Image 1 (cartoon, rainbow, N blue to C red):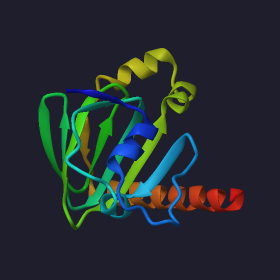
Image 2 (image 1 turned 120 degrees about the vertical axis):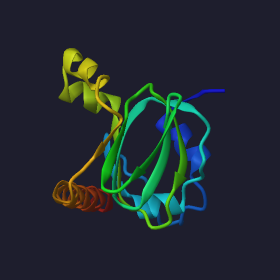
Image 3 (image 1 turned 180 degrees about the vertical axis):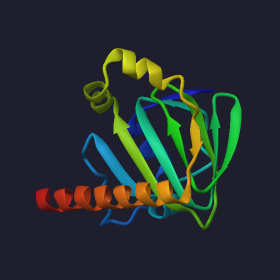
Length: 157
């Protein structure tokens, strides 16, 4: 059975034992370190269609993801792109994983890309092997975004 998963449904069904101090980011673009997320994420997940986009940057370690009927075991350095409406399932995450999970709400994608550009996203390969240099650059950007989003979250609290 394939479930349609909203962000709230995903959090309710696949998050476990989150610390009382943890708060999800409330922005249309969210970034979380994989090492933190994997500690509190239940997997394997059943097949689902998400109403959001996400990018997983794997700086170190391995990550196994099913996209449609194909299972990809991806080794660092790499990124995985899951488009809104794609059937997918998280199968496994290596214990030594490092990287970031970036969630992008549909309204953000719509604001960034016109309809033609968005349609072109469907032609990209769901994962891309990175050079070490590009992986380090992406890791730095994600780390800065995560810190900025958490600073803004703390200011609002």
